[in-house]
Length: 610
Image 1 (cartoon, helix red, strand yellow):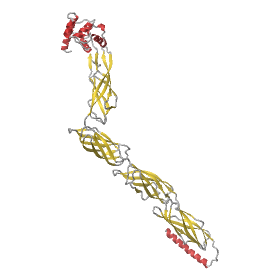
Image 2 (cartoon, rainbow, N blue to C red):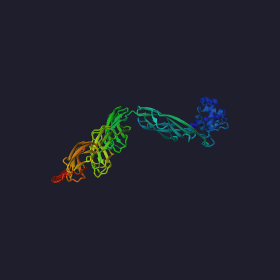
Image 3 (cartoon, rainbow, N blue to C red):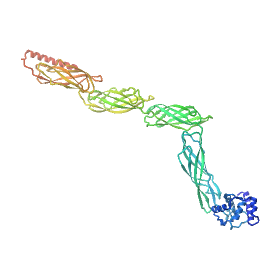
């Protein structure tokens, strides 16, 4: 207590003592001081509720004198008077002593309870937010407690403090309420609210409202008793969306597919309210996308509000990259209207690789048989997404018994959804067994950026048939008498799956048989088609009456254009006895001529098969 206050209280105390002794009338004090406005009943109620002083223990006249003498207008001012030692003056059973009253520090005087309350406020030191972001608003919750009576220890601390986002304005708070625990008198605690800022919000100032609730010890009595209560504060705080350039990625386009590299075009728009000068962007990729080897530094120049700038960067997309869009991270720097270099909020964009080109094999057919050449044919279907004009179909036999001389087939331009035919001439080893064989097909092509790419392999099956003669022969029983000649006909049928042409049939006789008409010709036979060929056969006079074989083979052209000689076929000729004419010189000459004929046939057969 300072000297001036002590002097004032001493003078007042002396005056009150004089009044209580009847020396000076009450009116004198009231006239001099003008009196206090605190109602006597309110004062008595306050003494009862807050200080546990019963109305019967109070001298109402002395209390009225105290109020008027000290001009007490409020219960707070009454508490201050009691704290200064005037409590003894108003008690009915106490006698006033001369001098200053005991204020409780020396012993025996009244000791007031500790009374007070927290004074909670909130502020937002960093209140600027950027559109299209989720910002963390870090509110500072401050307690500057108020002491009413006593030392104030323990009554100014806020306990169980919760902060509620009562009104988030145009923003979208990700949390409704946060508990921050106690806030000591003179202390500061932090409440962090993640808030989504709309992309299209206008620059300006916006109010949000916090509701802060807490409990505290309103009164701590001298006996240790605690009177707890709760309270709340409503605080409006301003959040600012500043006038500045803001950037968004309007579009990202590329025709680069996984496994390739090429250009991507990135369009950046200034969606802010101020121009951005000397704008630069640093662009990096992720998810299997590499930009310019690592990151691209692009100069975008001056961009007015609402205008766009374009950056063209080289991208490489890993072949193993999974499907879907890939992230691009962009960081921006610019100079503001004062020429000061600034950093804008970073942006994340999405790059969608071009759809991976795909093909499929359709309508695969073959006419393969053991020991013969054939064809594998089919169609390549362009499954999309783009047309291809330089594709090559590559086939790989997965069996050593199949031989494909030219394994690469150049395809024409194929639009998405269209097909192109292919044909691979294929030879089958004569040592092979019939059955299924596997072929692998791969389509090689170039990407939109001329990178070499491929689709496949696509595994397909073909069937190799067991060995089968090219032709089947049918004919009536053919007979010839000794020393005579017979003309006969055979029906040949094409047993192959392809058309055979220029079929030249040769008949070979030996021994006791001979022929003057040993050749026949068929222009063409489709699969399963038949034709009749005619020959003649002669038996010598001395031919043995029994079944003799004649042999045939066929020289023909395949659909591939190859000329082939078939294996040798045999057909039976039945020699019958001739009518006996006595033999003699004629029979001998026939025998000699027959022997010469046999020799001639042997020479002819040796020449053709050679």
